[in-house]
Image (cartoon, one colour):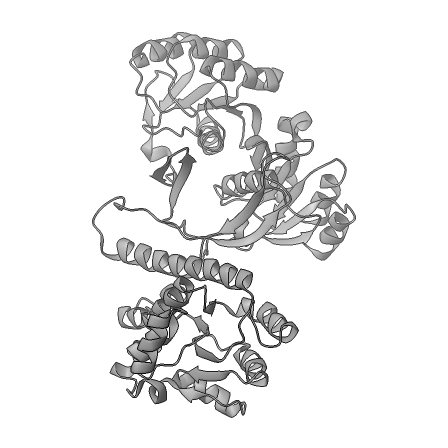
Length: 516
């Protein structure tokens, strides 16, 4: 461990920097600082030299150029070799042992304004170069890229009398390269979305920020962590506030996401229940309490240990019903005080508040992607909705107004069930769901079996087209009144004939909702 002699500090976020500089000063570390940081340290009565006093060159172009100079970067990039040390002496350059930099707030600026001049000025050039140079030379230089690192660094300096260990320098270098990579990714994505005419970029990079490490991944033998997208605004699991219960697991987060995305389909009060990524009950009504009652009635056995989501405030009556049996998670935009106290009596029940579920919101234009070994599948999100105006009525019998409403409801739910997916619904309430089957007719059998006698006068939504008439015949025997499906099969004519023979209505949407 080599004692620090010289540090360069240039920070946009000045939180905590005076405390760190004070510790450096205690160990007689010479501090070099950019003008704004130097002024702050001067007010705190901490000695610091301005960069221009080292470089013998002033900040120019309104601060666009201030740290990029051979006397700065030579001091950072020099190695402990005789040749490098001789060259430093020749050019009167002193080594710099510590770089403390955080970057201009590009992400925050771009999320608050559309003024391109303001956004462009928040693209950091010198800061990124300083971080990369110091991280490259981690064998000699320590690099600090976030105020979150200050506390641990100060503790180490105090314990080691002004020294920083090699292992710490290694760790800080990793974090610095991650910081610059994420920063460049955010800028790249912003400019691609702003100016590119391509649907998908030639090189796709994504930036995520860790929320927390998880106890394990999908299974006990797998490690896992949870990350969020920068500046996310849309209501989602990544911004959920945990108000009660133990830490969320990998599978909890995955299922909670499924519940939130389904309940976002509805503008009227709605309740959904998710189990293993699939809906096992969903309903909309004039209140969340009634919606939950109806959703639970769909498949109460599968609902045990499930994830519940509402798009309105959870009230006392609903909370009492929730706590009457075992549930993993309950999600709502808010909870009344009595309801929250009732839910908190269940110590292991995770209670999540997701702001915005009860308000109008815009879907973000982020991509949906799935990792495969050796590659990545990238696509637009499936956010397309339909109305009655989009439908093609292909059977002789037309659905009644009530049946049509139920069809559109079932279609929204089927969109969130794993394919092959079949949803039976009646009056904005699911009564039977068959999901994730390798055969569509088997999914029909499962859904009808769960519905039982309730299938009479219900409707069916299918996420994909019916390839044969067998599913129509099963639906007719169960008393189903109508079906909604994408259409587009080579057997469409056969399917329409079966619907006409059974005297049930058949509606094509023209779009499908496969979910794998």
